[in-house]
Image (cartoon, rainbow, N blue to C red; front, top):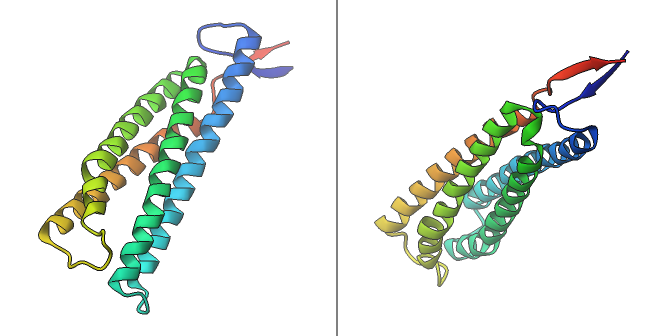
Length: 169
């Protein structure tokens, strides 16, 4: 007896193989983004509390690091969305995952354009005093990123759950 994955819509095995390959990519990039985001955040916190870095160095490090954070997140979420479109026929849960990634991507884009960019302008040139506007924007950015990553985590959990299986001879 052999077990194979089939899509819920009864599509052909060739289409199912493409969908399964897309699912592998989706799972991989979601896990990669969660791991990369954790490393970005861990590094950021470590730099902020390191006693030998003054505010000028901290600001310079932030202006170097965070564009890569947003590029990495956008790339991973875009690839996860594209893969999710190809594999959504395998399970209804993958459609839910796709909706979660879409919402997470919208939040991430809003954070970048409406919060991060104005925040970055407040630390260029480096070493300026932190204003109340900086504190407010930083709080917004942190909260939006936490919500974004929570949605990506929920999406990854949906994508990582086993697919429905059928038995064939």
